[in-house]
Length: 237
Ligand SMILES: C[S@@+](CC[C@H](N)C(=O)[O-])C[C@H]1O[C@@H](n2cnc3c(N)ncnc32)[C@H](O)[C@@H]1O
View 1: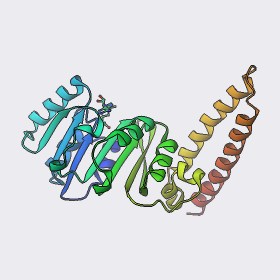
View 2: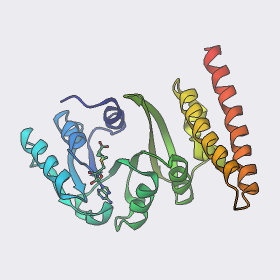
View 3: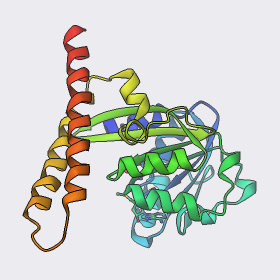
């Protein structure tokens, strides 16, 4: 089985012998791949919707993995049990705020996990802030380009995040440290989106948005600075 680059990048963050919960598994491609490659011992694959769960069921049957993938219908982490012995939670392909609420509402004790691997589709800054404020350290971050879409993948563990600056936390402290080749593209995309917000705020006539405009100007300025240093670094390599 061949995974897409995004799912492959997630798979590469999972150590040998892990017990994984794939929350929002959809087709169950990730847990099936991890099992076929003998990377994991077993997995719990969950989805809140019946249709994706049936698709997952088909993949699991096609690759004869039922004995070691426990498929469950349910919301977020709430259907995990202590006896599942899950040490790694993956939540990929959902919005950043949805991921944060899944982590908040889960009955599972997140402190007992060895790692959580997240791939938010949006609101990545919000999610990083949430993790840092809720006792998670951002251990590793990576970027993947797939079909012209740039994905951010975050590996967090229970612990204290060392970065203190909220702006750097929301951008991705490990990305800023490591300066991967795709970082300038990510920063340009963030600047493009922020400029649209800036333009819309300037057009807003009724409300007093001057404070918001100042804040967006400040963020644009900071992003331009980070982009300049990332581009310089890339040119120097
Ligand atoms: C876009 S798919 C992502 C599938 C796969 N994780 C991936 O990254 O390719 C999102 C899946 O998450 C499921 N989902 C959404 N909210 C959920 C929740 N609170 N708990 C479990 N599954 C959820 C959806 O039904 C859908 O199948």
